[in-house]
Amino acid sequence: MPPIALTNATYIDRACSSMRTGTILVSDKPKGGIEFVGQTPGGADVIDCAGRIVTPSFAIAHHHIYSALARGMPAPPRPPENFLEILQLIWWRLDKALDIDMVRACAQAVAIDALRSGVTFIIDHHASPNCAEGSLHAIAEVLDGAGLGHLLCYELSDRDGPDRRDAGLRETGAYLESHQGLVGLHASFTVSTALLTAAVEMAREFGTGLHIHVAEDEIDQEFCQDNHNCRVVERLHAAGVLEPTETVLAHCIHLDDDERAIIADSAAWVSQQSESNQNNAVGALDAGAFPDRTMIGTDGMHSDALGAARAAFLMAQREEGGMSPRAAYDRLRAVHEYLASNGFEGDAGNNLVILDYNPPTPITAENWPAHLMYGVSRAHVESVIAGGRLALDRGRCTLIDEESALANCREQAARLWEKL
Image (cartoon, rainbow, N blue to C red; front, side):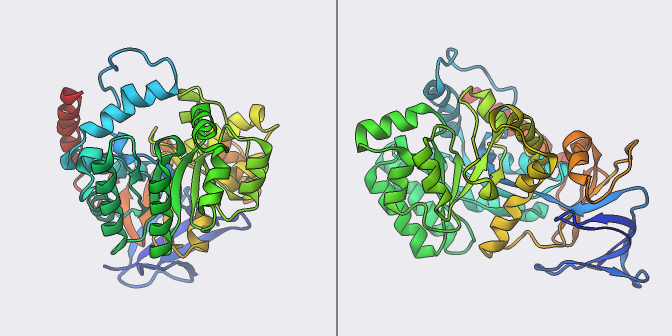
């Protein structure tokens, strides 16, 4: 495959420290980057980026790919009255209805949505209790085929009994034998002491971290205090969950100051999902104790990292005492530091998004974060380069058959909805 040359490209680097126009040669190596060249190399695939902005692509710190076929699904048997009923009547019904063909379709839907949003890397938290075996492998195969980097885990839980718990453990171990990934846990209130211990031991065995929902709702704290005589973060800290630098703690809403201090003193990272939190009416994250290790996720609502960052930015004006566009941008980009600092592959410098964004005001490297918070949206994503390959060309996926994939998604969605 010939290298890609971006001519007339106005490039803003990830740190927003520079803005430069010229010809960019994009490496097609797995850990490749970019370089400005004086002239277009012979044989290169040329993309004219005149009037466009080129910048590093985006990544999602916490996703639920398994929910991709939920859009428009039948209503639950009755309206949920609290967070636990949202899980019981909607999401736990849906995840148990999934089979491997549906799981694969979910990954297809997310791959297309992610690329159209300028996203080239996804950290995912998967659940399919009745088809755990092979589920992570199926998702990885689809994302690989679309050109997306990924860091997957299976949502371990005791909520569906020992057989399904053990199937999840087997799938996690089998997957980590041959892939980078994390050890997933649902939330403290559905995780027994035995499972928590087993998950931490598995993470140590494979030299990775854990990915767990933390205090998304008060029920997590109430259950922990009633059954373990401590708060959630205290329990996880004592079990060793917060030790690995790879650990991701999703949500972290209902914490006290002591728990926030424990996280701040740990190696763990936090993922924020403001839109999902609003949708479930569970509250909002206060990341003041650990702002440098807070990342942006979507929680299965969609695959638009930039949109999720904007939601966090707007929420922070009320919940965190305000946030500058630059601080919101740094939170959007924190996931790249998480991936790089832990040696995860798939998010190198040759992952780029080309934006057809022509504002009525000047763009500089310094004010680029404000443009992203107030102007740029997924509608401006024209093309995406993933791992040095053109994965989205003027709004169309190039590495997968988009029409066939979407037709399959609709077919599998109809099957899923019938089961629901």
